[in-house]
Structures are given as structure tokens and as C-alpha cells.
Image 1 (cartoon, rainbow over the protein chains, first blue to last red):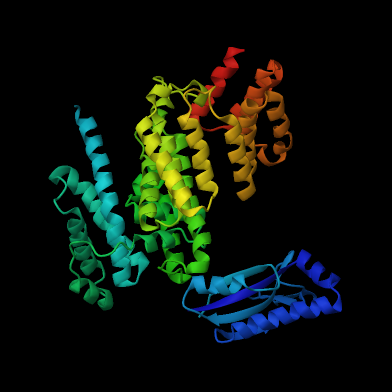
Image 2: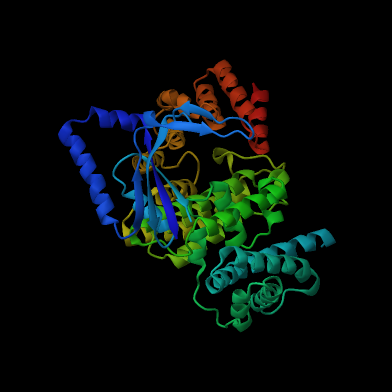
Length: 113
Length: 404
């Protein structure tokens, strides 16, 4: 089955990341790199998103001009920072992958087609 | 015997027969069809037919084969367009003796953490224990439509989110087993707290919980926590006859007539616990709770209870599974092991977590009363009374308030 793992960052995590020294941050990135390498055979596609302050949202209104706003579609303390599309047998396998994810603290798993 | 009574007895017998066979049938049909939802629908149809017909026609000699035949016929009927399923069903014969017990897979699927807790409970009762939607609704005092929706949503999630039908792999097993035990324990608690009184007619969830724990213990003999949970449930049940007086009022442990306890059952449950603990030497929260229950059950009187031992067991339990409720129970043991003052002291920082938990206030009331501070005690009892919805607990607290 195909799933998308959505990596969600919290405010706390972003602060921790910011507070890291260069070496520490390098380690953190290296851990993410290792995770992708370890699961390379199952990951069919992945995307890293630019920080949320770069987001622009457009709301389409039937008949009216669309409204464009600065920021993500939902303002919150938790933001999606990236996706990985994976091909695995079932939800348990997807959960197993998510469990070893070494970075941001929330991962949403959704079946995809 | 009155008509109503004999019908109730046969309903209980029916429930037992259905429970012994429905889960097995569900397990084989899920394996066969590879579709949890479709298989479950067929079993449920068969169960409902049985509940309708068996009271009139009598329970057949081979209930498993009977249920299977009805499910199969129904399957060939409703799955008309699903040629794939039809072909599989048409070939299927009910094998005797039954093929290997696949119910463990069924349990792990029903208790999958990706489902909501309510859904896990409803699914387990329905799929593993063979309860009908109406029976589940009655047991939890919720409308049948609510249960039906919950089940439909859960089954859809199983299919669409790819929740597997298998026993989790080694590494995940212990964590997932904890989830299964939590569902059974919750079921037990729900049944235990609401049993007796006005709900005597409702489904005995405690019985279902014991049955599930016992099934699981048979399927996973190397997991001491399963045996621990089973022992815990049996130790509580063994004291059942003394929990309510003849006016159906709750009787506190201290006031229970210990002559009414089932001492044989207590001995057997304790032996089960000791065997599991010795064989595996992997203590866990259920084994410890069962050990605490055993300390109570084996005491000849409330006064001669081994309170210091109970405090030690609570300490071990808190080490493995910190919880404010456990701390509250430890404080109660501390009252008898040490003093009411010591216990009262322990309650101090529990207010934040247990502000809305009636037993915290009821316990504090007891301790204050023991220390002669009756006005404060009364206030605490009033708070507890305002917080509980359970009629037996309400009655007990109301009675205490009327004493002083």
C-alpha cells in the first residue's frame, strides 16, 4: 500500500533546532540522511518544504476573485515541513518507519493513491 | 421458574455459545476472504440469526457448523457481485476439528492503536466475543446507532488505512500487547463498576473481560502480564458476592463479609499469578495489581491485611507505571501501614491531576473523618458526590453524608 508520511514540526522543536550549534545541527541532518538511506527501497518520493513563513495561501471562492493571503492555510503551532511517499505492505510497516524518524516529533500517516 | 427467568438463563447460555464460536468463525472468514469488513458482516448476520432462532429451536449440536452454514449462505447471497469472494466461499467447508485458532490475529486487529479506544472496545466485543450491536449499546448505555456508526467507521478505517490482519512482529509485540491488555482491562473496569444494582439485566462485561483474558492467556502462554491480568480479574470476581448488600448498595472492602468470598477461586487465581511470575520473572503492572488484589483477598480480616507489603507493591507499580490514581491507592494503603496523617500528606499534590476524580475527595473525606475533622470531611464528601455518576457510589456517599 502507498502511504504518505507527513513530517510535522512543533514550535518547541523549531526552537531546539535553532539553539543547536553547527556541529550538532550537522549531526541532526546526518541522522535524517541516514533514515532516508535506510528506507530507500520503500521511499518512492520525498519533498522537503521551505519554512512556513514562505507560504502563500489562495482561497478560491465560487464566482468571486480568489483571496490570497500570506502564511499557511491553517495558522498553528504545528506545521508540515515535508512529505515522504512510501510503498509498504500495511499500516504497521508504515508505523515502523515513522517510529525511527529521527527529526521533528510528529508524523501523520495517511494512505495515498 | 418464570418465563422471563428461563428466557434470561437461556440468553446467558446463548451468549456463551455464541462467544465460543463467533470469533473463530470471524477469524477463519477474514483469512479466507482477506476482507475484514465483509467477513465481520457475515458473522454478525449469522450471530443475529442465531440469537433469534436458537431460543425457539434450541441450540444446535454443532453451533460452529450451524453459524458457518448461515454465514456462508448469506455470503453467497450478498456477495453476488463479488465473484472472487463467492468462489472462495463456495469451496469452503467447515472443518472438524476446527483449524488452528486464529483469534489472536483478530484481537490484534480489533485493538490496533490506529483505532479510537471506543472503536477498539466495540470491535473486540463484536468480532471476538460475538456481541450484537444492540448488546454492546445496552452494556454501555449508548444508542444503538452510535455503536453502529462507531463499528462502521472502524471497519472502514481497517480497510482503507491498511490495518493488517496479523500478529505484530517481535519488536512491536510487547507494546501492542499492552494495548490489547488495556482494552480488556477497561472492559473489565467498566463492567465491574457498573455491575449490580439497577443494571443487573445488562450484559455482564466482566464475564466477557475474563473470557477474553483467558482466551489470550491460552494463546500467549509466555506472556506473564496476560496471566497477571487474568489473575487480577479473577481475584476481583471472587469477591463479587460480598460487594453489594441485599439492598443492592455497594459495600466497602473493610465492611465486606469475607465468608462470602470464593476462597477456592482466590487460591486458584493466586496460584496462577505466582506460577506466571516465577516462570518468567518479568514483573509488570498487571502482575503487581494482581499481587495487591491477592494481598487483600488472602487477608482474614481487613485489620490483618498486610498493608506494608501492599505499600511496597504500589511503590513497584508506580516505578513501572507512574499514575496519580495509583498514588491515590498507595496513600490509602499508607493510612493503615503508617497513619491517616501520612496518607493525607500524600494526597496534597494530587489535586492538580485528580481534581475531578470523585475517589480523591471521598478518600480525603475518610482520612479527615479518621482524624476527627468532620466538617472538612463533609465538604469533601459533597464534592465527591457531585462528581460521580455511578448510582452505587452516589448512594454510599449520600449515606455517609446523612450520618453526620
